[in-house]
Amino acid sequence: MSSLKLQYKKQVDELCMAGCSVTAEDILAKARERQLDAAEVIDDKTDSNISDKSKGSIVKFEKAKKEKAKVNKAKKAIWKMVVAAASVLLICTTTLAATGKLSEWYDKYFGDEKEPVTKEIIKEGYLYDINQSVTDGIFSVDLIGVTGDAETPKLAMDIYINDDALAAAHDEIRLMVYILGTYQYENELDLYSPWEGHAKRDENVPNLYHMVITGPPVWMCNGEEVVVDVWQIVMDEDAEIWDDRYPNIKFRYTAPADIFYPVSYFEYEDMKFSQGGIDYYLTRGEYGPYRSELVFEYDYEGTALVGGEDNYLELEGKLQDNWLQLVDTMVLVVDGVEYPVNAEDKGYTYCDEKGEFGKKNHCNIHPYFPSVDLETAESVVIKAGDTSYILK
Image (spheres, rainbow, N blue to C red):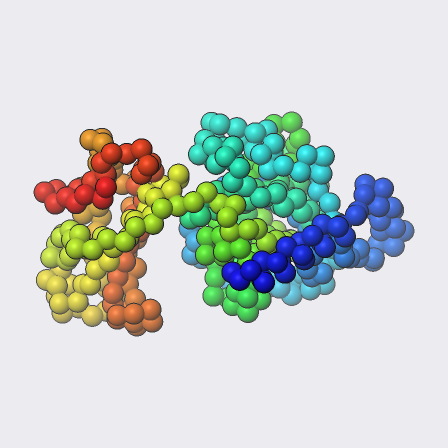
C-alpha cells in the first residue's frame, strides 16, 4: 500500500472518529421519535464504516467448518425480495460502549479454556476493536472486533434475540454469514457461500448469545474494507424442519493488516512422497499459532491409479482415498516428538479440471498439523513411511 494511500486512509479514519458524536441521550431521543412514527428509519450518518444500506442484528462467531457450504438458492432469492421492504433501525453505538475493548469481552465470555491460543494472541496486542451495532426486527448484532493470525482471522460478535419466548427455547443458534471484500460482495456474491458459526447463550442474560467465527484471510487480512452480512439465523438446527430467519444485518469495517499475528511462510522444492503410483510434492508451509498448514501438489493423469478414466467426478473419491492413505502415515517430528495430521483437517484434494488457474488437472491439498514454534524448535522433520525431509 502506497504512503499516499496510507495517509489518505488515516485522515479518513480520523475524520470518522471525530464525527461520530452520538450519545446515549441521542439514541433515546431517536427511539422516542420512532415510537411516534413507526415508519421512520433512522440513518446513521456518523459512522463511515456502515453504509446507508446496512441493516441490524447481533452475532457471535465460532470456527467456520466449511468455506464452501451449500446454500439454498431459492431461499436466498426470497430473502433478497423480503429485505428490500424491511424497515430498519440503524444506530451508531454499541452495548460495549462502556469498555469498547475486544480483550475485555473475550476475557468475560471465553477466557483461557475455550480458545487459549486466541487468548494469548489478544494478550500480545493483536486485535482491532470495531464496536458496531445493527438491529433488524427481533435481532440485534454487535460486531465487537477482530483478532487471530494472518491465516486464521476471527470475528467476535454478540447476538440478541428480542423475543423472550424464542430465546428461552434455544441455548444455541447457528448463523450463516457472508464475509467478503467490498467488490466481491457487491458484484460477485452468487459465486460465494456464507461461513457457518454457532452462538451460545450467555449464562446470565437469557436473550444474549456470543460467537467467535473464523473468516477468510484473503479479504480480512489485506487492510481493505470488509463486508459482514448476517444472512441467515437458524433457530432449530436439530429439528426436522428448521426455523430459518433472514435478517437484514450488514457491517462494513476496515482493519489494518498488521493487527493480525504474523504467520511464517516457506517454499519447498524436491520433497516428494509417493502413494498408489501418484507423486505428491510438498511445495509450501505456513506456520502460525493455530496450526501448521502444508501444501501438496500432484498430477494424476497417466497414473495406474486412474487408468484410462478421464471423468473427474468418477476419479474424485478415488484420488481422495489415495491421499488419505498417505497422510494418515505422515507426521511432523519436532525435536524428536511426532505430531500426526489433525484428524478433522486432513485436507481434501482439489483439481483444476479446466486449467483455469494453471495446468489442467493439476491438484493440490492443504492438510493441517499442530502448530510449530519455529523460533524455539531446533529440528523440524516431515516423515511418511521411509521418506523424510528436514524442514528446519
